[in-house]
Image (cartoon, rainbow, N blue to C red; front, side, top):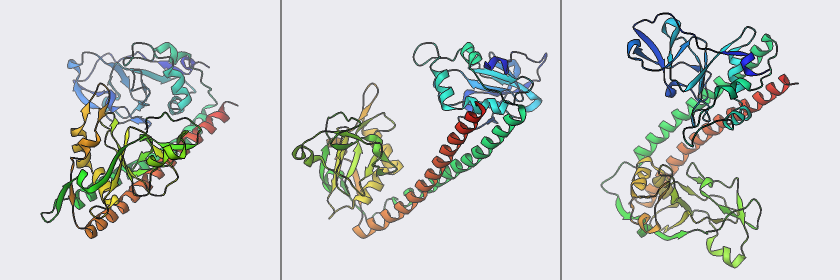
Amino acid sequence: MPLHDAVEFATDRPTSWPPDVAFITMSDLPESGLVANEWRMVQAANIKSGVPIRLGDLLVAKITPCFENGKQGIVGAIPGGWGFATTEVHRLRPHAGVDIEYVAYFLRRPDVRQRLADAMEGTTGRQRLPRGALERLEIRVPPLDEQRRIARILSTIQRAEEAAVAVVKAKAKVHGAVMDRVFEPRSEWLAASLGEITLQRQYGLSLRGTPRGRIPILRMTNLRGGSVIFENLQYVNLAESDAAPYLVNPGDLLFNRTNSADLVGKVGIVHGVIPCVFASYLIRLVCDRSKVLPEFLNAYLNWTLTQATLRSMATRGVSQANISASTLATLQIPVPPLTTQREIASTVAVSQLALDRSIAESQRMGTLFSSVSAALFSQDNK
């Protein structure tokens, strides 16, 4: 049935308001959770525009990029049961025999989101989801008990996913604190420019990768968590003699020199290796191991404060920032004794491993939620 037969696109409002009411802004809506439990109290007389809402309404963002980011939520226990929300939401209320949590989980399905995103109207950057597209969306509505069973299963998995995400945030804070501690300046440490402690700062190949080819080419998407990840590879066709100068080796660092302003400066170290070359928007750093260990330099370059320094060194374009090899060579690096570098690198690696494991568990729960959701709604559609 079309969604408008399952829910009401509510427009009602109370006859009077208390002096202070709850107001839900777009930032208050969750991107993955089920319930909108955050709001701020405002004076009703000062509200110039807003959508009246009440306990149990499902709010769905209608403007880009909030809709694509999954912003929606069921109104939680707001004071007085009534309040206001931003005008950039659709307000849905279930008809008899329809469970609003079931509807919310249905609307979170990636294929449903994509279908609705394709129906958005307006200029680039200010597109909105028209009410008609949402009203016409086809939804299967099984018996109420079955709706509640599906919602209950997905809610259980979602709570586990949220718990895993909370662990990631906690581990990220610990990792940040570890980095701050080990890189706290010491008066006895020497300092040198990156150019003085590296043997090579090499740009990669200006070749477009394809899904198939002779040799993999590493891109900025292959830098993750301070490591080079050999996944989702693209390929180029090169003769062995042409590829040889660009083949990466264990201990090489790949530095992302061109990206958006908030992502430029990402760094990853090559551990295990398969024969790969690297793209032109990466710079290969080869350490002088008599002065600096690759693992130490990689950790230092990935430290939050160093990343901020690198971003400040970038030249800004219209949509991208760039750090040249010559600019990168001027970056000042602390150079403690090699034994101290080894200890620091080891400490950071242990902390990073704990963070990576928590991220993997969070991703596993996200994948489980998606697969179970697809299976449950697929059964529902039979």
